[in-house]
Length: 276
Image (cartoon, rainbow, N blue to C red; front, side, top):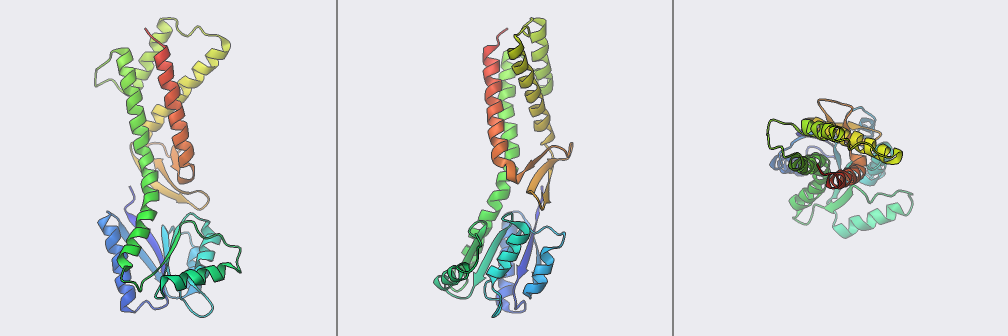
C-alpha cells in the first residue's frame, strides 16, 4: 500500500521559523500514522498555480490564507477546485484569529459563485492549538483513504461468511479445498442431482446468480494484493496487482458496498433454499 503522502504547500515566507515548525509538525503527524510526507513548497501564487497543471499527483494542499494584497488562500483554493474539483483536501491557516478568518471567508464568498465547504478547512495558528488543528485536519483526510482501503477487508469478510456457509452445506472441512473449488463442487452437485431443471425465468435468475457469484470470487481473490492509483477524472482507486482491470474507485465506494451486500444476500437466500 502507498506510504508517501504528496503535499503542495504555498507560503510566501518559506524562510521563517514558523513555517519550518509547521512543516516539521505535519511531517511528524504523518510519520506517527505510518506515512512519509513528501512536501513541495512554493512561495508565490503564480508558481503554485503552474504546478497545479502538472502531471504530479498531490494528496492534499496547505496554504497560508494571507498571501499578499491581491491574492489570498481562497484564490488558491479556487484554482485547486477549478483544476481538481473536490477530490483533494485543502488546509488554509492564518495568524489572524478565527473570527477574523471566518469573516474574511464570508466576505470573499459574497462576490464568488464558489461552493468551498467540502474537503476544506481553515484555522488560526495564533491560539496555541496549531498542532491539534493540523492533526484534526489530517485525520479527516486520512479517513477517506482508510475507507478506500477498508473496502478490501469488506470483500474478504463477506466472502468468508459465504465460504463458511458453503462448506457447511457441502460438509467439506478440508482446508486444502479453495473457495473456488467449493463453488464448483456445489454447482456440479446440483447438476448431478438434476436441480437445474428450471423454468426459463428461474433459469435466467439461476445463471445470473452463478455468474455474479463467480465474478465475486474472482474479485475477492484479486483484491488480496493491490496498489493505489489516481486519475484526474475519478480520483483515487485501488486496483489488483493480479488483474489491473479489477479496481475500486473512491467515487464508487457507496455503489461497491451496496452491490456487495445485495449479492451476498442473494447468495445466502439461494443457499438456504437448496438442500441436498
